[in-house]
Image 1 (cartoon, helix red, strand yellow):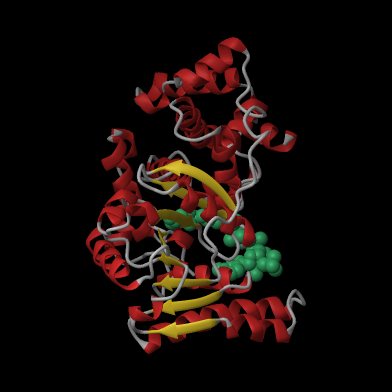
Image 2: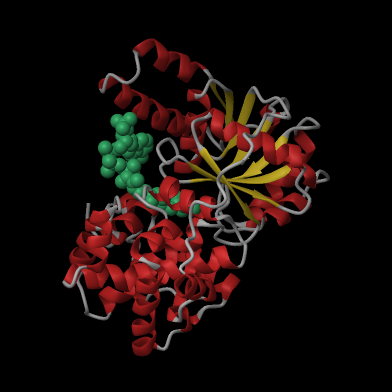
Length: 396
Ligand code: 3HC
């Protein structure tokens, strides 16, 4: 912790880069807490378990001292005039009154219980997220039915899981029998009707509302009464998905992070209509699969993407301004103990995905300062989507 504080406050190039990028992010986290969108514990857990950060933003403000952050933001605001750099009321209050953000609301939280028994899980989709989610449930002992549009796509899911399990076997973390047992829990299907008997469906198909609505209408037709219907959308409305069914009380958001088998976070997103038992069961299931659930409302970006992507976008804009190179920025941020530099992470997430999320956030919050960086649009237009296409901001 002291090391991180030292890096962020250092009077050198790396320290300046870290402050330029981290202070607006901390400001946003303070605002998210101040307006009551999520608890301090959940905001901090979000960034720690969703992005591998060593410390959550509110704990970092406490460690740096709210006054240091307020002073730094005031300096930034004097240069940029960007309203996003004006210290948030919650931050100013903490600085003025010597308040701390952390340590208050974690005690006394009840351990969630499974209220609707779940033994079989359906996963819809065959991309990276769907494959990772299928692995998570199979590894935790659930029977998994995964649904894709072709045998080739289903083979891709099995290939993804097999590769990950082989890596675990090679490292001596899993034995060969356990690998076969896990793979034996996975059943592929090209027809959605295979989901008729599952207790929970998690969909991770294209991030397109019309496509999701069509799926939810179909799940409503196919799934048994009482089945929980979850979407792993990162930016679309859970309520819209719920309203496409005749059972909105059974619909919930379960937002996993990339790579799903590794990142421990699941954002559990409820709407006004979500049944309390569904919410509690899903949070209990997260714990049963080794994940850490955080609760948040049905708003684009939830906790983590709303905090993460504007920071990534700011990193691109800093590079565009000529103030620092990609390498300098990636290095400076890793020196603050983030697991990846922003350009490395953009390439992992996919620049097309990042651009879409950033556009959604601008749509939701309307901040001019969050408009997607020009070079983000450019790499997407050129098909440099990141690791998945062999090139993005970096070349692989
Ligand atoms: N699939 C499965 N397992 C993987 C993996 C993958 N793609 N990549 C790495 N792993 C496993 C490794 O096997 C290893 O497992 P082990 O500890 O059991 O042996 C473990 O993860 C650590 O991997 P490595 O030692 O190879 O590499 P690192 O220490 O560099 O960790 C990382 C890799 C966990 C990905 C780390 O760099 C990290 O935390 N990065 C941040 C990722 C992040 O921020 N994700 C969120 C993106 S936003 C998002 O997903 C939201 C969505 O809406 C877009």
